Length: 309
View 1: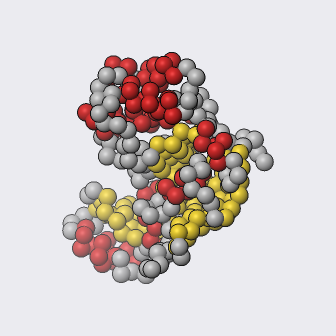
View 2 (view 1 turned 60 degrees about the vertical axis):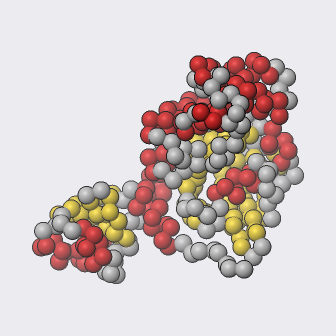
View 3 (view 1 turned 45 degrees about the vertical axis):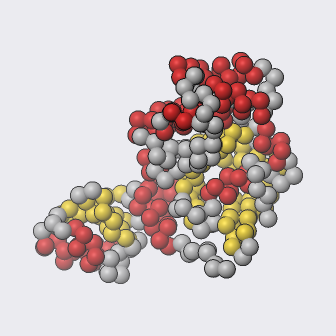
């Protein structure tokens, strides 16, 4: 066992009836690392996170989380993990401080009052301590949820789409806090749909239909995909996209604002097929593939694991 790994699991599998929601996932995350967990809705991200922190029992696989066995020592793992769910799950008729005090009671913290005060201070909530949770904006609800996760001084944060529905400034502030926590030694596994957030992670893991399709640094994942991308500008790009998607060498043609990103695997074949369109008033510029180009390609090439009952 590598003591530098906060998460070290292999073959993690979870089934619900005939459907395999998490299918033999191997994942290693180093201590102090921020690992971005990406994938479309229904890809198994939330299920995997719940398996890691002991809320769901795996049907197969093995490994450790914070040095504890993920199958037999789930109770010990829960005591050292902070888990932030997708939905706001606090009492809206209680104040911020009262909600944190309730969570501190659940963890049976020995010096509850001091723990609450420390959490309020760390997340910049002291001035709003008496505000009812139901009156908070999305960004402040997010801070309350993170403060609650940090009350018991966890070694690992599991954050399930924590910035969904939050404005850009609140998202940026949140990520600054996450990087500060990681710099202090905290490990973070965070699921997100935002590519700008993915680029702020040290490593990425991409799931689709229960399978881990890519794992590594952003540059490594882009390089391994082997995508060649051309950026196209000009008139009526939606019509052009329909035409280009019929070409054999074109894997995707996706609009990005006033540009069209056209990607393929075979560079020579793609350039040859695009050549006739240069005479129709369009401008073509070769560009490196981005994370979003790669993830769209991964999603489109993966197979749906849903089986109707």
